[in-house]
Structure formats: structure tokens, C-alpha cells
Length: 332
Ligand SMILES: C[S@@+](CC[C@H](N)C(=O)[O-])C[C@H]1O[C@@H](n2cnc3c(N)ncnc32)[C@H](O)[C@@H]1O
Image (cartoon, rainbow, N blue to C red; front, top):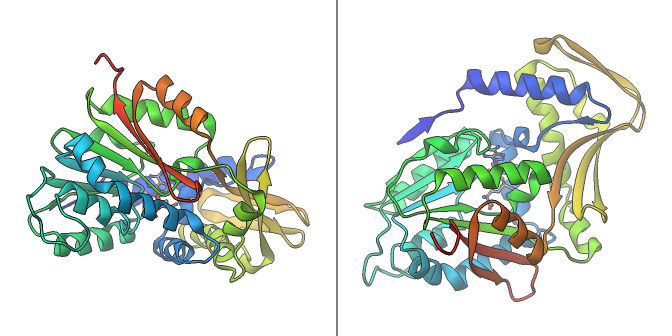
């Protein structure tokens, strides 16, 4: 079952508004959610397999070790996954919540009845929902094509729910957007329900930059894909290969910034929104931030949003953290 809250018409209007705001701003920007058409989602999957891109492997290691504990702590009947993509790692959680180790037959079925993946990328969502439905007989898979900054109030599933937000995607939101996002998750959860959050941790900038600027150039292709999306959906005429991929570490804000740098001066038409924009040679368009976290910062943000701490786990090299948060204060 798939609910489509982000209809093509809605997506077109949202992309048009974002493109108008971002491309007429100084400096220019585009929001990272627009990377993810079918090709963007495939490129992201390729990124997760790159030697330089440690976050997926690190988070997988934690999930392998902790899925059973997450099941015991939460007793979840519904697993909601925001920005679910391929939901590959999520299978470890599904196994834990259904009372079985990866690949084992269930000893005693866990209480999980429903899985709710939500993503803006309809193709990725449908593929993942289809594969999980086939591999998890008896599990209700209720996919939602939606935007996690807009459609959280329409999440199906019985309590208690765990809302998983994996992959460090939270780092793509700016601090005030993060605060708004955590508050909106808290608002839809009843006291005693759970948020499971994956956060990439601050580390050696060389390691971080390499993860976003791989030697095979896959991240560069992923970055440029946003221009292809604008060309296809808004009829723009970006010369995609005339933009270079840039990834830099902002030490003050503790985030990676991805940009696209115009190799020469050019003008670009975006006919669907009646825009003609100029790029100077070397001008940069900001496409994504990926914030890196420290435990104290995450705890402060979640406390402010009305969550109490459940657990904090890291991988064996302390590169990535998975943390569990209970909706409500300790007294609720
Ligand atoms: C960095 S990838 C992470 C994918 C997966 N959760 C993982 O851990 O590998 C971000 C995912 O979030 C989705 N996404 C990005 N912005 C979104 C938004 N505003 N609402 C819903 N999904 C979004 C993308 O389509 C993509 O699948």
C-alpha cells in the first residue's frame, strides 16, 4: 500500500518555489531533497558502497549490534522510516523488531506489525516497499511518498511507534530547520513512543571531505544531478558538465558544504518559472550541507524538543552514533 502525499503537481509547485527562491538569492542555493529523482537515488546507493563513504558501514555495524536491544527497549508495533531510500540497513531493524536475528527464522515473533517507509523519491520508495513486502511475509508495508518536513501528521500505524531517521540525513537540515523538524516529530508522537536517530560525528576533516569527494567521482555526479532535475522538470538549460563539484569542511559550523562551481560565466534559462539567471565564472551554487555532531549538541537539541534519552551507541571507531529518544519528559 502506498499513499502519495507528494503528488507530481505538489512536487512541481514546491520545486518551482524553491528554485525561484534559491536561484535568485545571493549566494545561490538549491535544497538537497531535489537530488533525489530515480537517478539521484541510484547514485546515492552507489555512494553508500564507496570506500571513502564510511557512514553507511558504521551505522550498519551499530544496527547489527543493537537491533535486538532496540526491540526490547521499544516494543514497537510500527516502524516508521523517514527518508527511507532503499531501506537496506533497515532490514536489520525489521529483523530485530520481529524477534529474529538477521537471516534466522523467528524464535518468537516480535510485536511489529507495520512498516511505514516515507521518502520524496517515489521510485526508491516503491522499489524498497516491493522488496520488503516480498521478504517479510505478514508484515504490513504502508509506504508514503512524502516530504518529512511537511507530511508527518499523516503517518499510519499502531502505537507504540519507532520513527527511524537514519543515514545522517538530519545533518542536511540547517540548525533552525532541525529544531522545527524535531519539534514536529515530537508533536506527532504520543508520550512513550520513540525516535531512533542516526548522526554522523565530528572527526578528522580529511576523512570527512574524502567521504563527500570520492576519487571515482560518484558524489560529483550525484551533486550535478540536481541540475539535471531542474532541466527535466522545469525545462532549464543548465550545461551540467560546466559545473564542478566542490566539497569543503566548514570548521566553525562543523558541517560539510557541497557546492557546484560554474566553470565559466553563463546565463541559464528556467522557462517553467520564467527565470533567466546569470552565473559569474567561479560562482558557487550551494546544494547541501551535511552537519556533523557531538553528543552534547544532540542531547541539547532533543531535550529542547521534548524527548528524553533512551540510549546512545557508536560504532567501534566512534565515527557515527545511533541514538534512541523517548517522546516526553522522564515523568510522562
Ligand atoms: C542521505 S539519503 C539516506 C537514505 C537512507 N535513509 C540511508 O540511511 O541510507 C536521504 C534520503 O532521504 C530522502 N529525502 C531527502 N529529503 C527528503 C524530504 N524532505 N522528505 C522525505 N524524504 C527526503 C531522499 O530521497 C533519500 O532517500
